[in-house]
Amino acid sequence: MDGVITIEGISLEDLVAAAYLDTSSFLHNKKFIKWLPKSSHSEAASKKDVQKHYDIGNEFYKIWLDKTMTYSCGYWESPEDSLYDAQMNKVHHIIKKLNPQPGGTLLDIGCGWGTLMLIAAKEYDLKVTGVTLSQEQCDYVNEQIKKYGLEDVAEVRLQDYRELPKSEKWDYITSVGMFEHVGKENLDEYFKVVSDHLAQNGNALIHGITRQQGGAINGWLNKWIFPGGYIPGLTENLDHIIGNGMQIYDLESLRRHYQKTTETWDKNFNAHRKEIENMFDERFCRMWDLYLQACAASFKVGNIDVMQYLISKGPAGASLPMTRDYMYK
Image 1 (cartoon, helix red, strand yellow):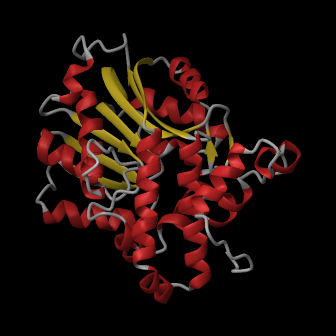
Image 2 (tube, helix red, strand yellow):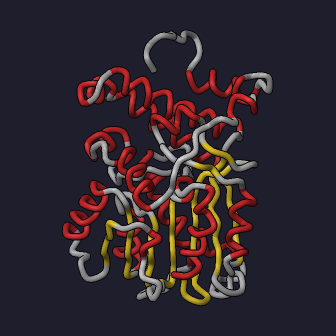
């Protein structure tokens, strides 16, 4: 990112993918990666980590995300889908999986810029609550709530998910791109919070990045992009789900969808590179370009995946239809 190396004739994405596929490369050197720094995930440290990544300015994210300001994996139903289409598809895919009933309540843990919770309120007749540690995200969601006149059915809290009052319960819980940020030592507590606040026979959809074996993100990403990140193993999450009194109903991989999403983000980013460079500098642009292409490469080769866990509080799927057909209507 310092501009010391120039790569020609191959994209960064393909170069990183080739390194992942070469088992003799430094990316597979356990002696090299075992010293990776560990981060505290106290409430204060978590807030600082979130703000470092998300509070660099809403205007920056508006440039290369779609108009919904959704910063997570899209769901590409058709090759002709735009990024906006894919993000809207994803939101509806998640909400439909919950089989929500009008008048129900929904908690969105790590609500981002609020797209999912606002659509749940506007189009599915749900009373929604979102929590985030980002001041800029909280301010933006409050603006959207007022813009659409949703004050009676939607609220956003600048709050750590661990601080939710124990007495509060919701019929449905969503959490998208969140558990990667809580840290290995807090994963069990994260799923305990979901269990504690999910009503009996309620459904939760937990969506996030996983890998075959859990592990800290690499040192460069930890320092420059996502401080404190930890990507859990697929079954690691299952152990925490079951251990906290919930049951798994459905599990879906969206790996290829996230590869396409990150590739689209990078294309948008570079289409506005001069504008972003004027906001920050060229070094910042190289850093983010490397981050986005490295992520695309990781999804491309299957080094990481993104999973949607549909879980129930009580017998698996007790409040859901007998087949998965309802998800696609």
